[in-house]
Length: 316
Image 1 (tube, one colour):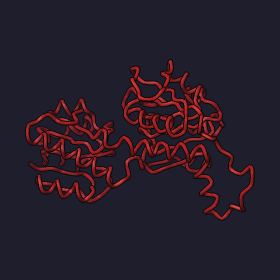
Image 2 (cartoon, rainbow, N blue to C red; image 1 turned 90 degrees about the vertical axis):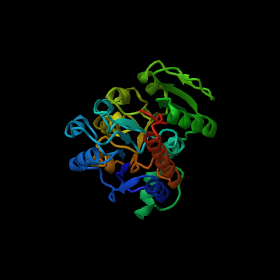
Image 3 (cartoon, helix red, strand yellow; image 1 turned 30 degrees about the vertical axis):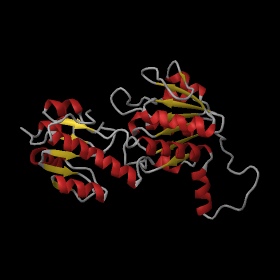
Image 4 (cartoon, helix red, strand yellow; image 1 turned 45 degrees about the vertical axis):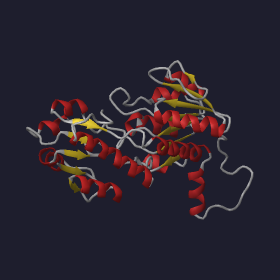
């Protein structure tokens, strides 16, 4: 069985893949271009794609009778794959949930603390040689202990963030989700997103990307938020309407933002890069060796199940 891995992976993942399958590992970290995606579908039985490898309806339509029968996505998010078009072409799709939960939640807490306590701004001040010593009113930020956090999307990652906020920082937890959740910590389900946005000190976006969540966080949400509140996005970039976010930050509608993802990633608007009250990370959500290795093995578990004719462990 021929397997294509579209980006370099941790060595343990590559070694397992090459031992088990006829594996080709693409040696660059850029997304597949159209020709490469067409070749992937035409020449390989299974492809392990990842963020940026846009398998849309046009891509599937351009390859008649594709050899590929599984896209074993490396990552929990799969909005770069048109799942309906894939199944119409006879191609299954899997992903890697679970392995990313705690690492992504940790980045969420990193951004909460950095944004609220103005840590990025302080580091830039120091590195520029402009720090002239401690004084009582320097870089005063938001003390998050005991404050209220709002979780937009109380799935695995949302719950992991909420647990950290509640047990680690004694924060009150409110949330919105499609259905009520049975949780191991106290949390109140808000009536709607506007109600949530108006009532919290930190709003954390944890929903999956898709047509129903595109620009979910828009100008109306920012208008509802407190001027002392911070937005944190660890979901996907296009869940937040970036132009509306920039406007809210420039006019002081909200105090700050911590972002790990961007609407037109990897392009980050100059307006965001220039604002001191914005913490920007280069999509670090799962960037730990053990996590990326676990993700790779989970993808390969799906490949192995497919080869054996078994149900996929992480069928999308």
